[in-house]
Amino acid sequence: MSSDKLPVAVIGGGISGMTTAVEAAETGLRAVIIEREHWLGGRVFGMHRYFPKLCSPLCGMEINFQRVRRNPDITVITGAELVSLSGSDGDFTLKATKNPRFINANCTACDKCAQACPVERNDDFNLGMSKTKAAYIRHPMAFPAVYAIDPSVCEGEKCAKCVPACGYGAIELAQKPETLEIRASSVVYATGWKPYDAAKIGNLGFGRVSNVITNVMMERIASPSGPTGGRIVRPSDGKEVKNIAFAQCAGSRDENHLAHCSAVCCLASLKQVAYLREAYKDSKATVFYIDIRTPGKYEGFYAKIAADPGVSFIKGKVAGVEEDPATRDVIITAEDVAGGAKKSYVADMLVLATGMEPNSAGLGAGVSGWLDSGGFFAPEKTPAGIYSAGVAKNPADVSASLMDATATAVKCLGGRWT
Image 1 (cartoon, rainbow, N blue to C red):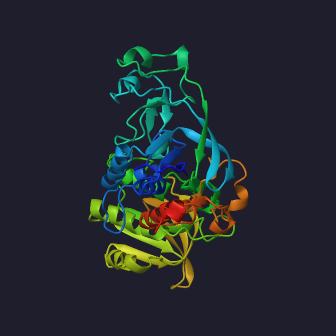
Image 2 (image 1 turned 180 degrees about the horizontal axis):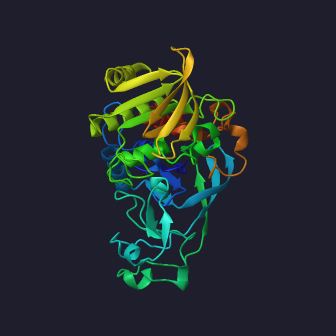
Image 3 (image 1 turned 90 degrees about the vertical axis):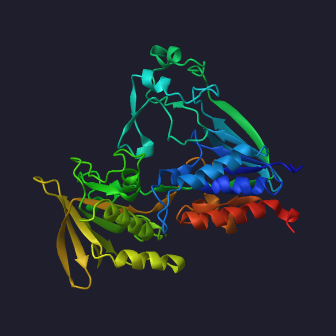
């Protein structure tokens, strides 16, 4: 039964935002999800597998989508960015700009608009490693299952080849931004994270050495829906990667970049080692690390990977990365703390375990005072009725984010919880 209270406004439609909204709605409240992208799902959709069981996240995401889709007490607003927030606990007013998707709800995801479109764009879902048309859908399981048109590359009415191609009257190239005003009893920031920009870490070669990639790129390469169809090959020449290296704490635990530990990078690299060893039995992996952090229930996962004879762990930071001009191999100079010296290593590809940086876009005005020195929401600084969930609060894995989202939904119940 719907609550008489104003709804809970959830800023962000990733795994934490969806979970907060669903848990709140299933306990009697109403919820509004305000998502900046045109689809829900966030970064979890880009993962190939979860650790430690190495299962696909897609089944769990589909269950969450069903819970959102079937619950009349959840309203989903996509393509919307928060502009301002005012009011106080129990009665907030949010103003947001809803950006046009240029395709309406008549869309059946038939792909005819993309087939007719002559313009390509970099596929941000695949981190620029592939292309889509200007008319596109983020993922085969995207929710809502409606295409969008990228206005940064679309020529609009000058081209309009998608309009006659659509047999359902779904194309609306004249759509304009809308201003929305939403009242809410409480507000939850579930704005998630973005990978730290590896190009800022000059000594690690990203953008300069062709076969240096980031851990989020590795997830997409390993995924069957990714740019290589799941084949683990290197960007420069499509060669199968049989000798891979991982540089941990790429930008994390570094006063010049991200001072915090990003919590999941060690585990992410361990599962990516497993991807390679599963794909190529004759492969080998080398992990350069400061500390391996796999606390509690994840310690067994580390022990399993470490027992693999094809995997080596070297305690020491990567100091420099260069490219062999003849082979395009990656030449790595790294500390070897146990050996007491710097050594050189050669790999087909190097994966940088870049850390989690909190999303700063779409927070609205006046939020900076609620954040800690790392840009994450500090609960002790936020006003009554304002909450944060998941990685908006601190770096965390999916499991911890889900638990935090559920706890945040309980907080939104306030005095109704007994």
